[in-house]
Length: 517
Image (cartoon, rainbow, N blue to C red; front, top):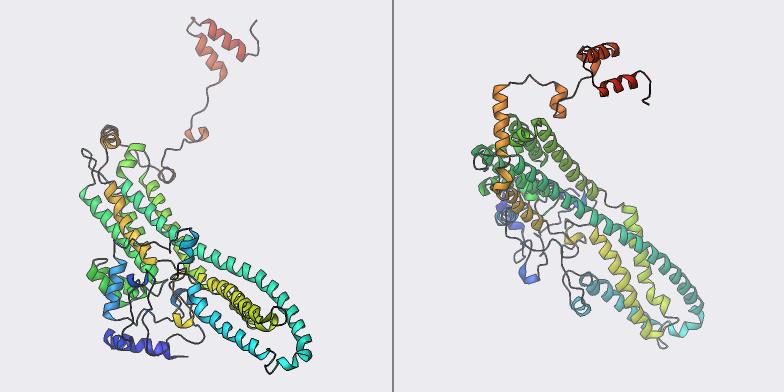
Protein backbone atom coordinates (compact mmCIF):
# COMPACT_ATOMS: atom_id res chain seq x y z
CA UNK A 1 0.00 0.00 0.00
CA UNK A 2 1.53 3.29 -1.14
CA UNK A 3 -1.21 5.75 -0.31
CA UNK A 4 0.31 6.82 2.99
CA UNK A 5 3.54 8.38 1.60
CA UNK A 6 1.69 9.97 -1.31
CA UNK A 7 -0.94 11.39 1.01
CA UNK A 8 1.74 12.64 3.39
CA UNK A 9 3.58 14.46 0.61
CA UNK A 10 0.34 15.98 -0.66
CA UNK A 11 -0.56 17.22 2.81
CA UNK A 12 2.91 18.72 3.26
CA UNK A 13 2.50 20.66 0.01
CA UNK A 14 -1.10 21.66 0.54
CA UNK A 15 -0.69 22.78 4.15
CA UNK A 16 -2.77 22.31 7.24
CA UNK A 17 -5.96 23.63 5.62
CA UNK A 18 -6.08 20.60 3.35
CA UNK A 19 -5.40 18.42 6.37
CA UNK A 20 -8.30 19.91 8.29
CA UNK A 21 -10.61 19.02 5.41
CA UNK A 22 -9.79 15.34 5.86
CA UNK A 23 -10.52 15.32 9.57
CA UNK A 24 -13.89 13.89 10.38
CA UNK A 25 -16.14 16.48 11.99
CA UNK A 26 -17.23 15.94 15.54
CA UNK A 27 -14.19 13.87 16.54
CA UNK A 28 -12.33 15.08 19.60
CA UNK A 29 -8.68 15.69 18.76
CA UNK A 30 -7.52 16.62 22.26
CA UNK A 31 -4.93 14.35 23.85
CA UNK A 32 -6.98 13.97 27.02
CA UNK A 33 -10.61 14.70 27.60
CA UNK A 34 -12.11 15.52 30.99
CA UNK A 35 -15.52 14.25 29.87
CA UNK A 36 -14.02 10.80 29.32
CA UNK A 37 -12.52 10.47 32.81
CA UNK A 38 -9.04 11.33 31.59
CA UNK A 39 -9.17 8.64 28.90
CA UNK A 40 -7.50 9.67 25.68
CA UNK A 41 -10.01 10.46 22.99
CA UNK A 42 -9.81 9.23 19.42
CA UNK A 43 -6.95 10.73 17.50
CA UNK A 44 -7.35 12.50 14.21
CA UNK A 45 -9.34 10.26 11.88
CA UNK A 46 -8.73 10.61 8.18
CA UNK A 47 -11.27 9.85 5.50
CA UNK A 48 -8.89 7.27 4.02
CA UNK A 49 -6.74 4.56 5.54
CA UNK A 50 -3.23 5.86 6.22
CA UNK A 51 -1.33 2.94 7.71
CA UNK A 52 0.03 0.36 5.25
CA UNK A 53 -1.19 -3.25 5.29
CA UNK A 54 2.35 -4.40 6.07
CA UNK A 55 4.21 -2.08 8.48
CA UNK A 56 7.18 -0.42 6.79
CA UNK A 57 8.45 1.27 9.96
CA UNK A 58 8.49 0.62 13.69
CA UNK A 59 4.88 0.44 14.85
CA UNK A 60 5.93 1.01 18.44
CA UNK A 61 7.57 4.32 17.45
CA UNK A 62 5.32 5.89 14.80
CA UNK A 63 2.36 3.52 14.57
CA UNK A 64 3.58 2.20 11.22
CA UNK A 65 2.89 5.60 9.63
CA UNK A 66 5.99 7.66 8.90
CA UNK A 67 3.85 10.68 7.97
CA UNK A 68 1.87 10.81 11.22
CA UNK A 69 3.48 14.12 12.20
CA UNK A 70 2.54 15.88 8.98
CA UNK A 71 -1.22 15.30 8.98
CA UNK A 72 -2.27 17.80 11.64
CA UNK A 73 -4.37 20.90 11.52
CA UNK A 74 -3.30 24.29 12.84
CA UNK A 75 -5.48 23.82 15.91
CA UNK A 76 -4.01 20.40 16.64
CA UNK A 77 -0.46 21.71 16.22
CA UNK A 78 -1.18 24.63 18.55
CA UNK A 79 -2.57 22.26 21.21
CA UNK A 80 0.44 19.98 20.86
CA UNK A 81 2.91 22.86 21.33
CA UNK A 82 0.93 24.19 24.28
CA UNK A 83 0.91 20.76 25.92
CA UNK A 84 4.63 20.24 25.31
CA UNK A 85 5.52 23.61 26.89
CA UNK A 86 3.02 23.33 29.73
CA UNK A 87 3.96 23.53 33.40
CA UNK A 88 0.45 22.88 34.75
CA UNK A 89 -0.35 19.36 33.50
CA UNK A 90 -0.22 17.45 36.77
CA UNK A 91 -2.17 14.34 35.74
CA UNK A 92 -0.72 10.96 36.78
CA UNK A 93 1.79 9.43 34.41
CA UNK A 94 -0.24 6.19 34.45
CA UNK A 95 -3.82 5.50 35.46
CA UNK A 96 -4.13 5.32 39.25
CA UNK A 97 -6.39 3.07 41.31
CA UNK A 98 -7.59 2.22 44.80
CA UNK A 99 -7.14 -1.38 45.95
CA UNK A 100 -10.70 -1.57 47.27
CA UNK A 101 -12.58 -4.47 45.72
CA UNK A 102 -15.85 -2.61 45.17
CA UNK A 103 -14.05 0.42 43.72
CA UNK A 104 -12.24 -1.80 41.19
CA UNK A 105 -15.45 -3.55 40.16
CA UNK A 106 -17.08 -0.21 39.33
CA UNK A 107 -14.35 0.91 36.92
CA UNK A 108 -14.88 0.87 33.17
CA UNK A 109 -12.54 3.34 31.46
CA UNK A 110 -8.92 2.35 31.45
CA UNK A 111 -9.71 -1.37 31.89
CA UNK A 112 -9.30 -4.23 29.46
CA UNK A 113 -12.89 -5.29 30.16
CA UNK A 114 -13.99 -2.31 28.09
CA UNK A 115 -12.24 -3.81 25.07
CA UNK A 116 -13.14 -7.47 25.55
CA UNK A 117 -16.69 -7.46 26.84
CA UNK A 118 -18.50 -5.72 23.95
CA UNK A 119 -16.57 -7.60 21.26
CA UNK A 120 -15.17 -11.09 21.80
CA UNK A 121 -17.52 -11.98 24.66
CA UNK A 122 -20.59 -10.84 22.74
CA UNK A 123 -19.58 -12.71 19.59
CA UNK A 124 -18.89 -15.94 21.44
CA UNK A 125 -22.12 -15.57 23.39
CA UNK A 126 -24.00 -15.61 20.10
CA UNK A 127 -21.92 -18.57 18.94
CA UNK A 128 -22.67 -20.54 22.12
CA UNK A 129 -26.40 -19.92 21.74
CA UNK A 130 -26.26 -21.19 18.16
CA UNK A 131 -24.41 -24.33 19.26
CA UNK A 132 -26.96 -24.98 22.01
CA UNK A 133 -29.82 -24.65 19.52
CA UNK A 134 -28.10 -26.93 17.00
CA UNK A 135 -27.50 -29.69 19.56
CA UNK A 136 -30.86 -29.39 21.32
CA UNK A 137 -33.14 -32.46 21.08
CA UNK A 138 -35.25 -30.76 18.43
CA UNK A 139 -32.29 -29.25 16.64
CA UNK A 140 -30.83 -30.46 13.33
CA UNK A 141 -27.84 -32.10 15.09
CA UNK A 142 -29.74 -33.27 18.17
CA UNK A 143 -31.38 -36.17 16.29
CA UNK A 144 -27.90 -37.38 15.31
CA UNK A 145 -26.48 -37.19 18.82
CA UNK A 146 -25.57 -40.85 19.01
CA UNK A 147 -23.54 -40.65 15.81
CA UNK A 148 -21.54 -37.56 16.73
CA UNK A 149 -21.18 -38.07 20.48
CA UNK A 150 -17.88 -39.88 20.05
CA UNK A 151 -16.45 -37.01 18.04
CA UNK A 152 -17.51 -34.51 20.71
CA UNK A 153 -15.78 -36.54 23.41
CA UNK A 154 -12.52 -36.48 21.46
CA UNK A 155 -12.94 -32.74 20.84
CA UNK A 156 -13.40 -32.16 24.56
CA UNK A 157 -10.15 -33.97 25.39
CA UNK A 158 -8.23 -32.03 22.73
CA UNK A 159 -9.74 -28.79 24.02
CA UNK A 160 -8.63 -29.60 27.58
CA UNK A 161 -5.06 -30.18 26.45
CA UNK A 162 -5.10 -27.00 24.39
CA UNK A 163 -6.43 -24.99 27.34
CA UNK A 164 -3.53 -26.14 29.50
CA UNK A 165 -0.99 -25.26 26.81
CA UNK A 166 -2.66 -21.91 26.13
CA UNK A 167 -2.68 -20.97 29.81
CA UNK A 168 1.02 -21.77 30.09
CA UNK A 169 1.88 -19.78 26.95
CA UNK A 170 -0.29 -16.80 27.89
CA UNK A 171 1.32 -16.48 31.30
CA UNK A 172 4.74 -16.09 29.67
CA UNK A 173 3.40 -13.80 26.96
CA UNK A 174 1.80 -11.44 29.47
CA UNK A 175 4.90 -11.47 31.67
CA UNK A 176 7.21 -10.60 28.78
CA UNK A 177 4.88 -7.86 27.54
CA UNK A 178 4.74 -6.27 30.97
CA UNK A 179 8.53 -6.53 31.23
CA UNK A 180 8.85 -4.48 28.05
CA UNK A 181 6.36 -1.95 29.44
CA UNK A 182 8.41 -1.61 32.62
CA UNK A 183 11.63 -1.36 30.64
CA UNK A 184 10.28 1.49 28.52
CA UNK A 185 8.97 3.30 31.58
CA UNK A 186 12.33 2.85 33.32
CA UNK A 187 14.18 4.29 30.33
CA UNK A 188 11.89 7.32 30.25
CA UNK A 189 12.45 7.96 33.93
CA UNK A 190 16.21 7.51 33.59
CA UNK A 191 16.29 10.07 30.79
CA UNK A 192 14.46 12.46 33.06
CA UNK A 193 16.88 11.65 35.88
CA UNK A 194 19.99 12.30 33.75
CA UNK A 195 18.59 15.67 32.76
CA UNK A 196 18.04 16.52 36.41
CA UNK A 197 21.57 15.40 37.30
CA UNK A 198 23.04 17.59 34.59
CA UNK A 199 20.97 20.61 35.63
CA UNK A 200 21.91 20.12 39.29
CA UNK A 201 25.64 19.97 38.53
CA UNK A 202 25.49 23.03 36.31
CA UNK A 203 23.66 24.96 39.04
CA UNK A 204 26.34 23.87 41.53
CA UNK A 205 29.37 24.70 39.40
CA UNK A 206 28.09 28.03 38.09
CA UNK A 207 30.22 31.09 38.83
CA UNK A 208 29.09 33.18 41.82
CA UNK A 209 29.74 36.64 43.11
CA UNK A 210 32.29 36.50 45.98
CA UNK A 211 30.64 38.91 48.45
CA UNK A 212 27.02 37.72 48.02
CA UNK A 213 27.30 34.15 46.75
CA UNK A 214 24.73 34.78 44.02
CA UNK A 215 25.17 33.89 40.39
CA UNK A 216 26.98 36.37 38.21
CA UNK A 217 25.08 37.78 35.25
CA UNK A 218 27.04 35.60 32.84
CA UNK A 219 26.37 32.47 34.90
CA UNK A 220 22.67 33.34 35.19
CA UNK A 221 22.39 33.65 31.41
CA UNK A 222 24.28 30.37 30.99
CA UNK A 223 21.95 28.46 33.32
CA UNK A 224 18.90 29.92 31.57
CA UNK A 225 20.22 28.65 28.24
CA UNK A 226 20.97 25.23 29.70
CA UNK A 227 17.44 25.00 31.14
CA UNK A 228 15.92 25.91 27.78
CA UNK A 229 18.06 23.34 25.98
CA UNK A 230 17.05 20.67 28.48
CA UNK A 231 13.37 21.37 27.81
CA UNK A 232 13.91 21.49 24.05
CA UNK A 233 15.77 18.18 24.07
CA UNK A 234 12.96 16.48 25.99
CA UNK A 235 10.34 17.78 23.54
CA UNK A 236 12.22 16.66 20.43
CA UNK A 237 13.13 13.36 22.06
CA UNK A 238 9.47 12.40 22.45
CA UNK A 239 8.65 13.92 19.07
CA UNK A 240 10.88 11.17 17.63
CA UNK A 241 9.32 8.40 19.74
CA UNK A 242 5.58 9.19 19.84
CA UNK A 243 2.90 9.99 17.29
CA UNK A 244 1.27 12.41 19.72
CA UNK A 245 4.22 14.83 19.66
CA UNK A 246 5.55 13.93 16.20
CA UNK A 247 4.32 17.27 14.75
CA UNK A 248 6.95 19.10 16.85
CA UNK A 249 9.80 17.81 14.68
CA UNK A 250 8.26 19.07 11.45
CA UNK A 251 9.21 22.48 10.01
CA UNK A 252 5.84 23.88 11.05
CA UNK A 253 6.24 22.44 14.51
CA UNK A 254 9.66 24.01 14.95
CA UNK A 255 8.28 27.36 13.81
CA UNK A 256 5.54 27.03 16.42
CA UNK A 257 8.18 26.30 19.06
CA UNK A 258 9.98 29.49 18.01
CA UNK A 259 6.76 31.43 18.59
CA UNK A 260 6.41 29.75 22.00
CA UNK A 261 9.96 30.78 22.96
CA UNK A 262 11.32 27.24 23.16
CA UNK A 263 14.07 27.97 20.62
CA UNK A 264 15.35 30.80 18.43
CA UNK A 265 15.11 31.23 14.68
CA UNK A 266 18.80 30.49 14.30
CA UNK A 267 18.46 27.29 16.28
CA UNK A 268 15.47 26.24 14.18
CA UNK A 269 17.49 26.68 10.98
CA UNK A 270 20.35 24.64 12.44
CA UNK A 271 17.95 21.85 13.44
CA UNK A 272 16.49 21.78 9.94
CA UNK A 273 19.97 21.43 8.50
CA UNK A 274 20.81 18.61 10.93
CA UNK A 275 17.66 16.59 10.08
CA UNK A 276 15.76 17.70 13.20
CA UNK A 277 17.06 15.30 15.80
CA UNK A 278 17.23 15.67 19.56
CA UNK A 279 20.85 14.53 19.37
CA UNK A 280 21.74 17.98 18.04
CA UNK A 281 20.67 19.48 21.36
CA UNK A 282 23.02 17.14 23.22
CA UNK A 283 25.82 18.35 20.98
CA UNK A 284 24.96 21.95 21.78
CA UNK A 285 25.04 21.23 25.50
CA UNK A 286 28.40 19.49 25.20
CA UNK A 287 29.98 22.44 23.38
CA UNK A 288 28.34 24.88 25.79
CA UNK A 289 29.89 23.08 28.77
CA UNK A 290 33.30 23.15 27.12
CA UNK A 291 33.20 26.89 26.45
CA UNK A 292 31.72 27.67 29.87
CA UNK A 293 34.50 25.80 31.67
CA UNK A 294 37.11 27.50 29.51
CA UNK A 295 35.92 31.05 30.28
CA UNK A 296 35.17 30.40 33.98
CA UNK A 297 31.36 30.48 33.97
CA UNK A 298 31.42 26.90 35.27
CA UNK A 299 33.66 25.31 37.94
CA UNK A 300 35.62 28.45 38.91
CA UNK A 301 34.77 28.60 42.62
CA UNK A 302 34.93 24.84 43.14
CA UNK A 303 38.30 24.54 41.43
CA UNK A 304 39.83 27.27 43.58
CA UNK A 305 38.46 25.93 46.82
CA UNK A 306 39.59 22.32 46.34
CA UNK A 307 42.69 23.05 44.24
CA UNK A 308 41.19 20.90 41.47
CA UNK A 309 41.67 21.53 37.79
CA UNK A 310 38.59 22.80 35.90
CA UNK A 311 38.91 19.92 33.47
CA UNK A 312 37.81 17.54 36.23
CA UNK A 313 34.47 19.35 36.42
CA UNK A 314 34.18 19.33 32.65
CA UNK A 315 34.77 15.59 32.50
CA UNK A 316 32.07 15.03 35.09
CA UNK A 317 29.54 17.09 33.14
CA UNK A 318 30.49 15.45 29.85
CA UNK A 319 30.06 12.01 31.41
CA UNK A 320 26.50 12.94 32.36
CA UNK A 321 25.79 13.87 28.74
CA UNK A 322 27.28 10.59 27.54
CA UNK A 323 25.10 8.69 30.02
CA UNK A 324 22.11 10.63 28.75
CA UNK A 325 22.89 9.72 25.14
CA UNK A 326 23.25 6.01 25.88
CA UNK A 327 20.01 6.03 27.88
CA UNK A 328 17.71 7.79 25.44
CA UNK A 329 19.10 5.82 22.47
CA UNK A 330 17.90 2.58 24.06
CA UNK A 331 14.23 3.65 23.97
CA UNK A 332 13.82 3.26 20.22
CA UNK A 333 15.76 0.01 20.40
CA UNK A 334 13.16 -1.37 22.78
CA UNK A 335 10.20 -0.11 20.75
CA UNK A 336 11.57 -1.21 17.40
CA UNK A 337 12.14 -4.85 18.42
CA UNK A 338 9.45 -5.16 21.05
CA UNK A 339 8.41 -8.73 20.10
CA UNK A 340 8.73 -10.93 16.98
CA UNK A 341 5.71 -11.30 14.69
CA UNK A 342 5.79 -15.11 14.82
CA UNK A 343 5.43 -15.13 18.62
CA UNK A 344 2.47 -12.75 18.69
CA UNK A 345 0.72 -14.57 15.84
CA UNK A 346 1.13 -17.96 17.54
CA UNK A 347 -0.41 -16.68 20.75
CA UNK A 348 -3.29 -15.06 18.89
CA UNK A 349 -4.08 -18.14 16.77
CA UNK A 350 -3.88 -20.51 19.73
CA UNK A 351 -6.15 -18.34 21.86
CA UNK A 352 -8.70 -17.74 19.10
CA UNK A 353 -8.86 -21.46 18.33
CA UNK A 354 -9.36 -22.32 21.99
CA UNK A 355 -12.13 -19.75 22.43
CA UNK A 356 -13.82 -20.65 19.15
CA UNK A 357 -14.11 -24.38 19.97
CA UNK A 358 -15.21 -23.82 23.58
CA UNK A 359 -18.99 -24.24 22.92
CA UNK A 360 -18.44 -27.48 20.97
CA UNK A 361 -16.09 -28.83 23.65
CA UNK A 362 -18.52 -28.12 26.49
CA UNK A 363 -21.81 -29.18 24.89
CA UNK A 364 -21.17 -32.85 25.65
CA UNK A 365 -20.62 -32.57 29.40
CA UNK A 366 -22.13 -29.41 30.95
CA UNK A 367 -25.49 -28.92 29.27
CA UNK A 368 -26.96 -25.86 27.54
CA UNK A 369 -26.64 -23.44 30.44
CA UNK A 370 -23.08 -24.57 31.17
CA UNK A 371 -22.14 -24.13 27.52
CA UNK A 372 -23.22 -20.49 27.50
CA UNK A 373 -21.73 -19.58 30.88
CA UNK A 374 -18.52 -21.52 30.30
CA UNK A 375 -18.01 -19.89 26.91
CA UNK A 376 -18.46 -16.43 28.40
CA UNK A 377 -15.97 -17.08 31.22
CA UNK A 378 -13.31 -18.68 28.98
CA UNK A 379 -13.65 -15.94 26.36
CA UNK A 380 -13.47 -13.16 28.92
CA UNK A 381 -10.37 -14.60 30.58
CA UNK A 382 -8.27 -15.68 27.61
CA UNK A 383 -9.20 -12.82 25.28
CA UNK A 384 -8.61 -10.25 28.01
CA UNK A 385 -5.13 -11.61 28.75
CA UNK A 386 -4.14 -11.54 25.07
CA UNK A 387 -5.55 -8.05 24.55
CA UNK A 388 -3.87 -6.70 27.68
CA UNK A 389 -0.52 -8.22 26.69
CA UNK A 390 -0.70 -6.65 23.22
CA UNK A 391 -1.56 -3.27 24.70
CA UNK A 392 1.43 -3.53 27.05
CA UNK A 393 3.55 -3.75 23.89
CA UNK A 394 2.43 -0.21 23.01
CA UNK A 395 3.40 1.76 26.13
CA UNK A 396 3.50 5.15 24.33
CA UNK A 397 0.08 4.85 22.64
CA UNK A 398 1.46 4.92 19.10
CA UNK A 399 -0.82 2.29 17.58
CA UNK A 400 -3.95 3.63 15.89
CA UNK A 401 -7.32 2.30 16.97
CA UNK A 402 -8.03 0.90 13.50
CA UNK A 403 -5.11 -1.48 13.98
CA UNK A 404 -6.03 -2.56 17.51
CA UNK A 405 -4.50 0.21 19.59
CA UNK A 406 -6.22 1.70 22.61
CA UNK A 407 -4.61 4.76 24.24
CA UNK A 408 -6.84 4.47 27.29
CA UNK A 409 -5.42 1.16 28.51
CA UNK A 410 -1.92 0.79 29.92
CA UNK A 411 -0.45 3.83 28.21
CA UNK A 412 2.14 6.21 29.68
CA UNK A 413 1.20 9.89 29.68
CA UNK A 414 4.19 11.52 27.98
CA UNK A 415 2.71 14.99 28.53
CA UNK A 416 3.10 14.53 32.29
CA UNK A 417 6.80 13.72 31.87
CA UNK A 418 7.28 16.80 29.68
CA UNK A 419 5.58 18.96 32.31
CA UNK A 420 7.81 17.53 35.03
CA UNK A 421 10.95 18.33 33.03
CA UNK A 422 9.71 21.83 32.23
CA UNK A 423 9.36 22.48 35.96
CA UNK A 424 12.52 20.72 37.10
CA UNK A 425 14.74 22.41 34.51
CA UNK A 426 14.15 25.71 36.32
CA UNK A 427 13.95 24.27 39.81
CA UNK A 428 17.67 23.59 40.22
CA UNK A 429 18.72 27.01 38.96
CA UNK A 430 16.25 28.81 41.22
CA UNK A 431 16.91 26.67 44.30
CA UNK A 432 20.67 27.32 44.17
CA UNK A 433 20.48 30.96 43.10
CA UNK A 434 20.80 32.01 46.74
CA UNK A 435 22.45 29.86 49.42
CA UNK A 436 22.74 30.38 53.21
CA UNK A 437 25.71 32.28 54.60
CA UNK A 438 27.05 29.17 56.31
CA UNK A 439 27.26 27.47 52.92
CA UNK A 440 29.00 30.23 50.99
CA UNK A 441 30.85 32.61 53.31
CA UNK A 442 32.94 29.85 54.87
CA UNK A 443 34.52 29.29 51.49
CA UNK A 444 34.99 32.94 50.54
CA UNK A 445 38.11 33.63 52.74
CA UNK A 446 39.74 30.47 51.46
CA UNK A 447 39.12 31.55 47.89
CA UNK A 448 40.49 35.02 48.64
CA UNK A 449 43.69 33.59 50.16
CA UNK A 450 44.11 31.33 47.11
CA UNK A 451 43.79 34.33 44.83
CA UNK A 452 46.44 36.25 46.81
CA UNK A 453 48.83 33.30 46.66
CA UNK A 454 48.31 32.92 42.94
CA UNK A 455 49.12 36.57 42.35
CA UNK A 456 52.18 36.59 44.66
CA UNK A 457 53.61 33.26 43.54
CA UNK A 458 52.76 32.50 39.94
CA UNK A 459 52.84 28.79 39.31
CA UNK A 460 54.49 27.07 36.42
CA UNK A 461 52.35 25.68 33.62
CA UNK A 462 51.04 22.25 34.75
CA UNK A 463 51.75 19.20 32.67
CA UNK A 464 49.12 17.18 30.79
CA UNK A 465 48.96 14.51 33.51
CA UNK A 466 48.49 17.17 36.19
CA UNK A 467 45.63 18.77 34.26
CA UNK A 468 43.91 15.41 33.80
CA UNK A 469 44.36 14.18 37.36
CA UNK A 470 43.64 17.55 38.95
CA UNK A 471 46.59 17.37 41.37
CA UNK A 472 50.40 17.39 41.34
CA UNK A 473 51.77 13.89 40.82
CA UNK A 474 55.08 13.30 42.68
CA UNK A 475 57.86 12.21 40.35
CA UNK A 476 59.97 9.11 41.05
CA UNK A 477 63.21 9.63 42.92
CA UNK A 478 65.42 8.69 40.00
CA UNK A 479 63.77 11.38 37.83
CA UNK A 480 64.55 14.18 40.30
CA UNK A 481 68.36 13.78 39.80
CA UNK A 482 68.80 13.52 43.56
CA UNK A 483 70.61 10.52 45.07
CA UNK A 484 70.11 9.30 48.63
CA UNK A 485 72.83 10.23 51.11
CA UNK A 486 75.18 7.31 52.07
CA UNK A 487 74.86 5.82 55.52
CA UNK A 488 78.45 6.51 56.51
CA UNK A 489 77.98 10.16 55.62
CA UNK A 490 74.81 10.25 57.70
CA UNK A 491 76.69 8.75 60.66
CA UNK A 492 79.55 11.21 60.24
CA UNK A 493 77.15 14.10 60.14
CA UNK A 494 75.44 12.92 63.28
CA UNK A 495 78.79 12.50 65.12
CA UNK A 496 80.48 15.59 63.79
CA UNK A 497 78.87 17.82 66.34
CA UNK A 498 80.52 15.93 69.21
CA UNK A 499 77.39 16.31 71.24
CA UNK A 500 75.30 13.33 70.04
CA UNK A 501 72.58 12.27 72.42
CA UNK A 502 71.92 8.81 73.76
CA UNK A 503 69.09 8.44 71.29
CA UNK A 504 71.51 9.05 68.41
CA UNK A 505 73.94 6.44 69.75
CA UNK A 506 71.10 3.97 70.14
CA UNK A 507 70.01 4.61 66.56
CA UNK A 508 73.59 4.10 65.31
CA UNK A 509 73.90 0.85 67.20
CA UNK A 510 70.60 -0.35 65.78
CA UNK A 511 71.67 0.57 62.22
CA UNK A 512 74.93 -1.38 62.75
CA UNK A 513 73.03 -4.52 63.71
CA UNK A 514 73.59 -4.49 67.52
CA UNK A 515 70.63 -4.81 69.78
CA UNK A 516 70.56 -2.66 72.92
CA UNK A 517 71.19 -4.41 76.21
